[in-house]
Image: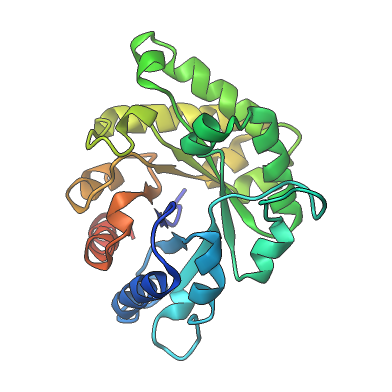
Length: 264
């Protein structure tokens, strides 16, 4: 089955509103020269404070803004309430979001997010009409102990628990080997593809073959313009969740361009 690639930029805790708008304009200027069928699905995930700033300059005038989707970097599973510092799915949607990233390794590590919490968030996002980008991945210690497949399969089963096959099919998973995030190390493309293929088999186990064929699974871990072509040439890698290289328009646009050479 042909799956449309996704190139998603996670800006993490970077860029003030003016800087975020400038970066968005740089990406918008690049994608305007391509038709939607030529492009991968392009997603950017600014900080909460920049979501409205970026969404406000999206438009349908032919400048390219309508070809870029916006994601929040996190959300709460409740619609509202006494959850200081949190943002609901409805708030993310109101700010112009189409996607929400959940379960990122940094959220798991620094904020003690559990598989149960991520499952609740996935259900809330889907119920709210948005698309979850569900992150999974292993530490260096887990990989060296031979626990990669077991650990990630457990994360996927927990994240998708109680979600319908139809909703699983429209979701996105991002495999991020934690030891390769921000370290300059990149998981070998063949090995990344092997893990992603394993993830797809777990999706098939819990949600059926149609969902497994439809769901897009991304690679995330020090993705660069120089690595994306080899990654996208693999059988099961459907795109990338890009960190540092998404903070500069030139490098992010090059990743989009190199993806189009191989996979669109």
